[in-house]
Image (cartoon, helix red, strand yellow):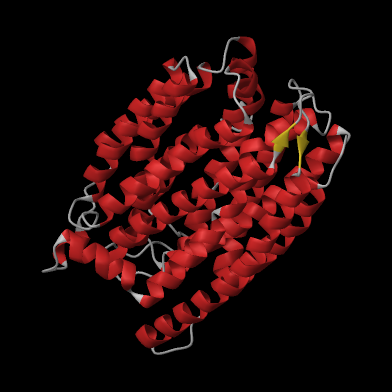
Length: 419
């Protein structure tokens, strides 16, 4: 049992370490994915590829991540989560290094498959660790700090990555990620304690039976369907964001780092505030507020023409604050759904579904968006309408999940609960 904390203290020193190391780990994962977006205008030109081919570069990561997540899900609750984390993070570092030395479209495609195979499982393991170590009442705060990695990748990673790519070539951002990841790997090996309490819950099911039982559980199925749509927005908009900004909105490539940095600072500041708010007024309520903000700004952004940079920064900042609110609140809500003995499998399958859905979304985006000979992208407004439509449906699906969690919490506590 963890000893009671002094008044005013929310987390122990070790818990703060776990939050910090998982946040930095998420930073490397998110940066590895997001760095492709600002590099899109470079890769389209240097590799002489089409928007559909670039969509495949994004999608193969997602598809391989989804496949490996399903394969690993049945075994996820049978091992120490620290050992699983170290194994898959090692593979992720190796895959990212391959991206850094890739010289052709085919070699980059293979490198993304390797990176996705290992990287796609890490997020699920991280969320299982959070669920194991932190109570539901503080998970909004934890997710708020973890999701700061999303903003940090914009504030630090993307601008630095763009500067490296502009000054030298597009390989350098991946090498930078490898360097940071090695330091994180060392910290996990040395300082993280074994996470194996879930192993004390005996199960007679073999890995395949465990996987099937988890997939077919009705309440879990509802969560997986919601995740399918949750993944749509980011995977549709982000891959072509830089190309849209430079070719349609009149933004210079030297201005992109500043836009990403200011947007990231705004979401970094608001992330912990949103997490605390979700613990205070309800995670679903914060999800709805974030989604409405995101929908308004997505429609605005996707219908822009040549726009002054300062206006674009304001629109981007508000849009990503809304997206961040959705991510933090929905992630915290999802952790309350699985039973302790199913957490690893549930998080693995949920992560796989998100990756697969995102891969399909990126491919669909590549088919919707067409690049003309002068570089301008067509059909971006249509892309915005598709994203907003998925967000509206997700609000309804998350409402159903929220009601289930309320009933589940009330049954356990004997009182009405509002997660």
